[in-house]
Length: 150
Image (cartoon, rainbow, N blue to C red; front, side, top):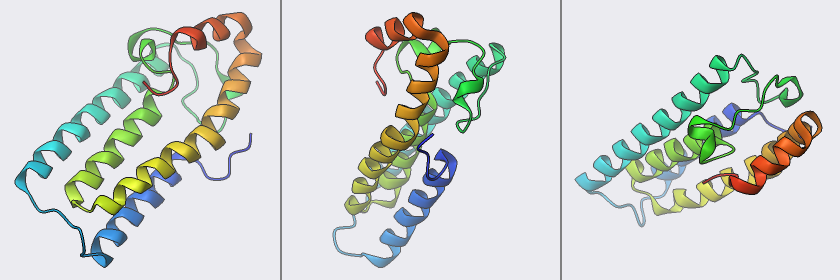
């Protein structure tokens, strides 16, 4: 794989970067009770999406390890995987978005784009190659009907 940094580490680095930006950059910060409500909703949705994906992976008795996609024993196309080929990364993104909203620093929104770019380039594309090699036509058909993110 072309993976440089595992997804959970990327998530943690960007979360810390958001906190540092928030502490360092006072200009532009938004303070509103509505931000907490919006952040809470994003956090809950992200956690639910992630939990549903993990449950599907465990139920199918296939790997959850993002570093070893070639160890997948089955292609999951139901549940939350009907809507996103990468619901765990989508959940990560929603949780990072929750943090960005809660902190109220618009500059942190740029880090969401960094997350999507990095995960797409260095995690999802190599995963897709591995899954294509494992599941062939079945995986190609799945990719044709379900988007990467949403």
